[in-house]
Length: 53
Image 1: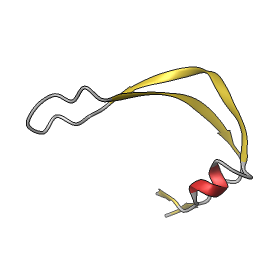
Image 2: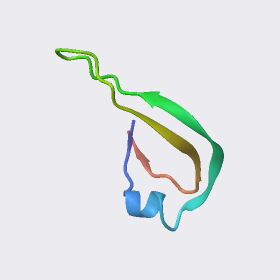
Image 3: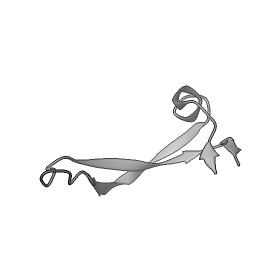
Image 4: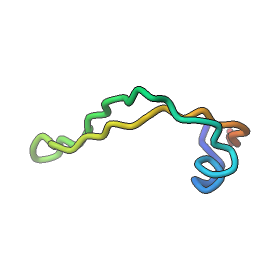
């Protein structure tokens, strides 16, 4: 299953809200050496996501 929608729709007209608490997402890049990159992102409440099988 894959997302079949655009970021413009997901983060635009279909975005209903963002969470206050942010989730820590470490980078999985380990090719050659350990990556120091990571992200802290909020959760998103989205309506009408399109999926394709």
